Every structure is written in structure tokens, then in C-alpha cells.
Length: 217
Image (cartoon, rainbow, N blue to C red; front, side, top):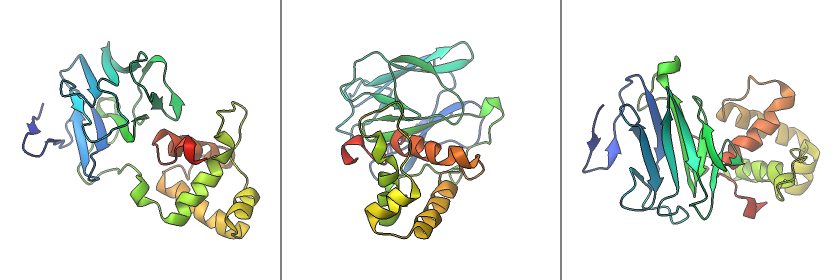
């Protein structure tokens, strides 16, 4: 396993097979944390954590853990964190097995779990990028916020806002809303999903990555 560049605090990942966490630091720099050879690790703000998020004040000292389960990895949050852990847009209670491509959020930091040993595309420094708040235009951010508005109170029967509802809220034409949503579908790599699934998946990605918080809805 390639070691960290201790001066920069960054793990390098050159495409070797195995599980890896992909996330960004407070400057927006992309980091890779290989899991090969480990059996368990902790994530948090404290100095004793294996993956330390010292810059994120919304992360607890020991926030969550990853545990090896056979040939798989499980994400664990046993209630130690104050703000919770969100896996693919849903608050995690206990543990959940991770699959290649899953996203989870601790505080304001989002992670992508990749497992190249399962046949996924190998990772490189210029490979797939996580969508961040900085990569959304002001209008795109307003649109995804309006799209997520019905989920403010965690209603299990909520559905994404319609194009007309978004247009009325933002004083845009319906055609303009459709154009922006098509761009967002491409940005989040969900443009190939069936039409009736794209909007729900976009909400899941936006909330799961912490790009829109429920306080903003």
C-alpha cells in the first residue's frame, strides 16, 4: 500500500486494485485513502482518528468507523456523532455494507467509496470527480434547492418539486428549468437513468453529498 505524503497529508493512489475512500479537504483538493491491508479504521476530527477531518467543525471527535466484513466493508455509526452520518442521502443508524460508488457524508465532508477489486474503473488523480458546491453555478444551486424543498421535514412520501413549481419559485421559464436539470443530470452522471428516476436520484445525490442542507429547504 502506498504511504501518505506526510508533509501534505495526502494519500496518493495510482490505480492499484482495492477499496479506497475518495474525498476533498478544506481547500477542495482531492484525497485518496486506500483501505487495502486494514481491518478497521475511525473517521473524525480527533487526532487519534485514522481519517482525520480536522477542518470540519460539524464532525465529531470520533464520528464514524469502517469495518472489514469478510471481503466487504461496512460503514458504522453507533450514535457517537452529534450530526449523524448520511449514506446515499439517508441517515445511517448502526452499520451498512458499502458498495462501489456509494457516497456518504460526515458533517460537511462527502466521501465516495470505490472498490476497484470488483471490476470498477481504476482511479487516477484526474479520474471521476466528486461534485462539490463550488462546481455548481448559483442558478444550479437554486434549482437543486427548490427541487429538494418537499424533503424539508423528512416526509417518506415526499417527491421532488415539479418543473412548474421550481419555475414559479425562481421566476424562470419551465424550459429554462428543464435545460438546467439536463445539465445537472449529466454533471451527476445520472443522465442514462429512466426519466422517472432521474429527479429522485438527483435529490438523493444532492442531499447525500451535503450540497444542500435540510436547514436550507
